[in-house]
Length: 497
Ligand code: SF4
Image (cartoon, rainbow, N blue to C red):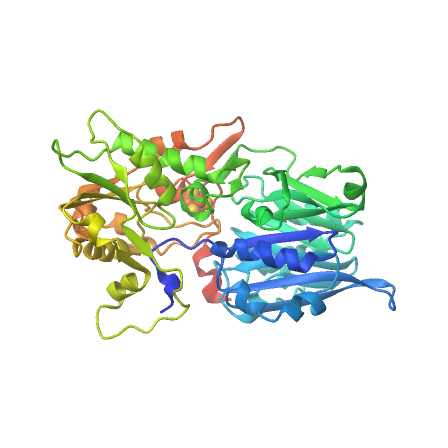
């Protein structure tokens, strides 16, 4: 059992690319570190450098299982081995393919047009059929991931230049992808036509020039003092090359001729992305506060006059929304105060040895403790972002009750999760989702031991996120309405390969 088995959907991957910086791999390392929440199973960096003797660009690569700080614990890996002025990085959590070492990204290939490295965040939905076709055409797969499909399609392309080869490949695949691709000449970034996953572009002033960076979230820019330029648009491929450095112009291409209305993953705002990040051109923090505020308006906590109601968050992901919730003084509800009632340990290791008591409960205790003086005799409103299996919520409420509050009410800043995600997030199967076992939220509340439970409605969720022309949201894990059809047997992908 790993400590990552906590009852949350697991976000998949973080991608980073740096172009034209003398310390490209060091910047990539720090950017990956700030994106650690997007994947904690493995990390990798590839760098491109000019070999004067061979008079051509070569690459160096280093990957390993574990957190970024552990994989690159020897500074020499970055300073000596991963030399060069361009680098590409990836944090992995596997959504397709097993956790085998061979599946750790970035992937690199040497082919007829040169060297190309790729980092992918997302999940393709026509992997099985493409893999079958490519295998029949002679492709030999080295990994069990959907990402490798891109490499084979690019290598199979008859187009003359790499950008056209990549575009051709992207027109064949279906599903969710935010990609960073490094070639000997350029850094390429692309988001699928629906733009499920975020991807941003920024730049850094160097002594006499500019370096360009792409990253899943802008917290990766802040750590290395990069300036945010914009989000890569859905259905857009951009090229950052020598000309971009000279003129500042970012070349932009459409993937499909007609750009559909975007289907940004709404869960990125609810839980996956960091609150200090910008994604899809908007601040996550602002949206998350609004989620809390709308939740408070929709389901305030009612208490008798004179009773003390406090709002606490399940840290860290519930913090911002809990603040938003606590600031609403609705007509029906009591004024509430935001308090720190749960303390989270950030030093939980990757593996977990439980003494002979309930493993789930002990695991919650390893991660959280209560501030008893804050909770005792209070009516406690616990704000969290989601409930998946419900097992952690149940143990958490039990833990909170040990601090003797008067009542414990659970408020969730998302609707009940009832459906799996096929676009790059790892939810447990439908059968494991607690919302599929009960008629209504009152019953779920009872099952997890809360005095009351309210979820944010889908309508209010959609009102909480930025409204823009041409931008819509994927809500499939709540509504079952999937924007892209899923390959038959998609679920069998990682088992069969
Ligand atoms: S199904 Fe849910 S988690 Fe997956 S992309 Fe859609 S909103 Fe995001």
